[in-house]
Image 1 (cartoon, one colour):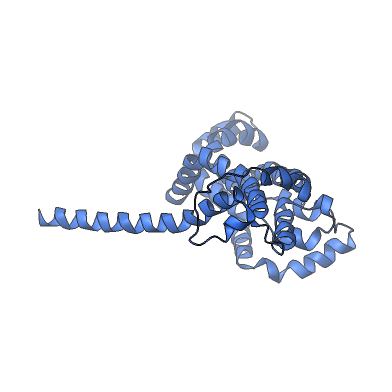
Image 2: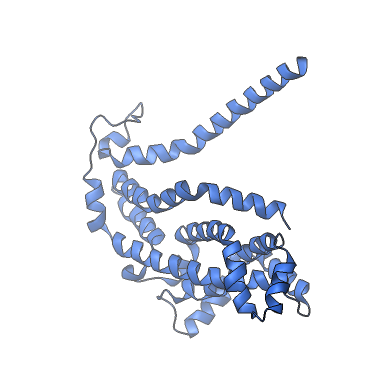
Length: 280
């Protein structure tokens, strides 16, 4: 009885802490949405008004003419979809090779790839910029697309762990039947790891969509800039004018695709991370 009572008190305390943490995390998001519907003067009202007395929707019309928001969305979609679709194929092929094939120095090569995760991007961005500049890729989307086409080491790692749960006997039976390695991947491996691929693809898409540092390095022309650079320019240009509702409206529009994707696929994301951590 005493143990049960202590457990209830502990659970209640944890629940209260989680609620406080959730409020702290969601409050800025709610304030951003609320501000996007306010007038300029209402933003600085004291005490703050979380719910505007009058909802102004005109800022959601102004954002399309105040800056290249539409082209930013299109450019971000081009980069994110191209990299995630092609990069997922190459990453899953690499994971299949590291998990199920036998070749010399397999583990050493995989550890070398994993060690690259410890190298921060600022350590290589200058050399990358010089290389891409010599190739004439600056102010194009190529520096953002081409490197990702060769795969993502984080996705390779998680898919490799997931593939360890698949019996080798299935692959050996397919090889006896004369199926090639690409046939094994396409007909057996890929259908089995679809849930893990879907979750990792979504996480990768979200990361590329929110990426800021590489685009700010390589993209100069407004018509070629990605969405996050456009939002940063909104902040630089309109914060001086105290037009925070316009900035927040643009931020809400940029957030919507990621929020919708996460709400739809949150179960697959959580399950994939849990399964990849348990199996292998």
